[in-house]
Image (cartoon, rainbow, N blue to C red; front, side, top):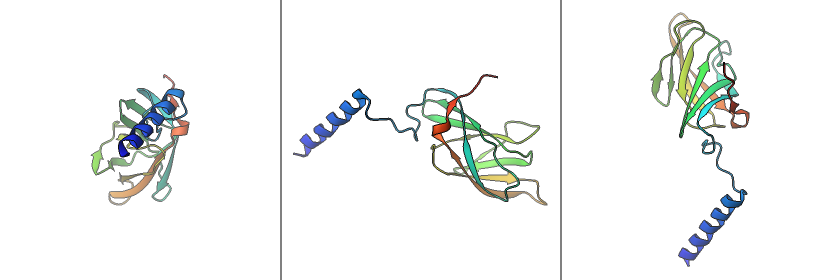
Length: 140
């Protein structure tokens, strides 16, 4: 009996995919083609003086998404995402980082180390990348 139920479910799923009534999970980005995209984000945390600017750029390669995020401040010397430290990709101007995006439409906790105060401080923030705003980035 269990075998027939599993076959029935598999058949229904296949039919839904074939006719288009099932949609791939955009939160995982499974239907996003490789390329460079612009994406809006929301940002929370800290004192509100420094923020990550929106939109950001996301580069998709297979199942990997890397966001290029720009602070409105040159005073961030590293970011920590999922326990990994990321250094800025630029030497002048506002701090810019390339960080992994594990999920869209979910808050991602990051730590930014700022040197703008009397001594360096790690501050926790959350970033949410919104899949419904994702569109191919314009060429420069």
